[in-house]
Structures are given as C-alpha cells and as structure tokens.
Image (cartoon, rainbow, N blue to C red; front, side, top):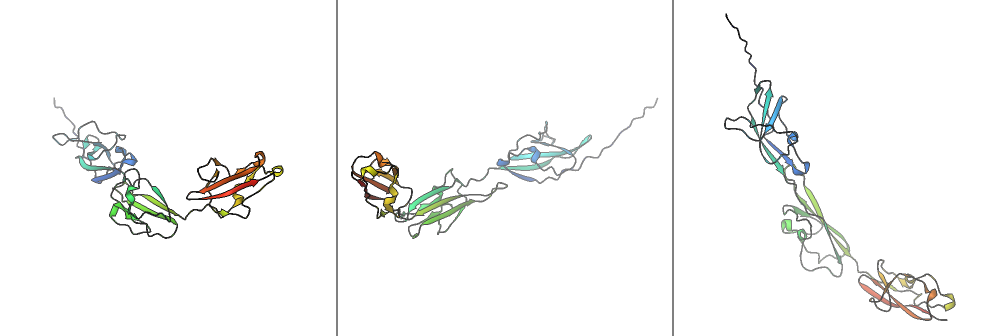
Length: 265
C-alpha cells in the first residue's frame, strides 16, 4: 500500500532593522518595552546567544530593566525565526550640575581674593560644565571670579551649565552673590529724647518714633549698648517708675545708642 505524505514550507521572517545603538537615561527607568524593535512581526529579545548563534532562552520580559550592554532581537513567524540582530544599549547616568548656592557681602567688605564658583555649589557637581555671568570668569569649570572691584549694591548671578549626556538633558545651577549697601541704625529724630509725666505714661510707645532713616530688620536692646537684653520696639511704659531708660537699636552692622526715654512725675 502506498502512503502519501504532505510537507509545507514557510518563509522565515525578515530580519528586524532596529537602531543598532539605542540610548536611554536612568531617570526614565528604561525597560525592554522601551526598545525599538524595527519590525512589525512578532519578536523577542534576549541577552546572549549560544555557540551556534541561537538566542538563549528564556526571552526577556517587557518589564525587565535595561542595563548597558548587548541585546539581541529575533523576529518570529509561525515555525520560523529570523537571524538574531545585535543591538547595543547605552543607559546613561544623568549629569549633575550641583545644587545652587548664595553668597552675601557688604559693599565695604568685599573679598579681595578670588572666588572659585564651583566650590560654592553643593552636591558634588560634575566638572564638565561652563560658567556664564556678569563678570569675567576664568579657569573653565572652576569658575574663578574676583568681585573686589564691584562698586554698587545688587545681585550677581552666575550660571553653571553641564551639557547633555546622550539622552540625559543638560542641567544648570547658579551661584547668586548679593552685595548690600552699608546698613544704618539711623539718626536720632527730633522726638529724641522723649519725656513723660508718670500720670500720662503711654501703654504702647513705638521706639522707632525716636529714629529717622533707619534700616529695617534690626534689633532693639535695653541699655546703652547692643549687649543688653533684647526687647520689642513697642514698650508699655505705664508700669515704669520715674527714671531714665536707654535703648539701643542695632541694624546688622552699625549701632546707634541714644537716650530712649526720660520721664518724670
């Protein structure tokens, strides 16, 4: 009896044509699902081949995290598979421009020595960037400046920019130098010293009424020096006994001592 058999021939799918170098940034947490396969057929990814050039199973899952190295993609169609195609994966570490910083100086006390701006940044910045700003900057990423010739108060903002690394975007940080005018505690006003009768002592007297042209943000103290006990600017004299009371206003840099209150019965 003759026995007839049936055979079938299937075409192997075309080899995928993915980008042979694919780059990612770790901040995106890339996985196998983010790879570009370069085929519309079914496909699978693997990390290595055996001695005959066949992918070593199991295939990678879409959720597997990518690392830098070599991957292989193979198209699949029914009983046939394509030749595996090698793809190089780069997973780049994001650049680090450091964390921004501020410096404060008074116009009459500027440093005469150079300032290296990169030393002011926090978080250990990459030494691959460039500086820009309103003054001459030297020494590349070190960012050396000298502010001793500055003649007016204001802010000087210097920007440090580190270029992109593959798909990881560029980053920047700043060093902001604020230069202040000389602060003053003001001058005695025409109301200074103030005198009161015990029968008419104020319950909420504003010490600032005894000053002219003072800078805000200072501190009041009891007595004729800035080392006295701190107090508020509003004083309740209604409970005071006859005598002379002095107060000092300190405004950051300069002190003004004055006869604050002198009242009698």
